[in-house]
Length: 87
Image (tube, rainbow, N blue to C red; front, side, top):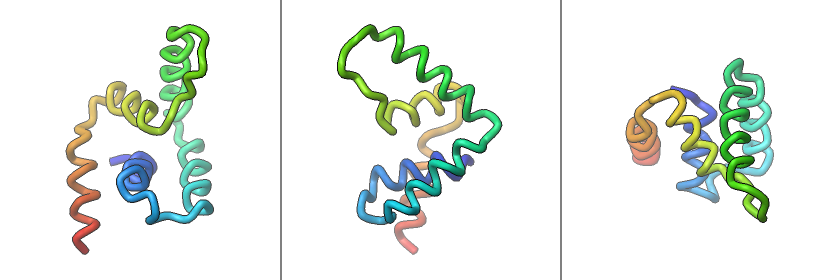
């Protein structure tokens, strides 16, 4: 399970849970992953293929690219977030 993806998903579902500093720290940590460039490149290709316009990739899109490329089970992440919120 990718802790950075889990963090992003948790932040999406619980927007007031994390501070701006925690969000920035997670983004910096995620950039250090060896496969991060692969996901960013794939997302960039998709965005380039959409043509010009005001589209800006948001976290939801990038998370979906991650799950599509890794074939990980997104539901497991959602279950982990749900489990953590009960504690």
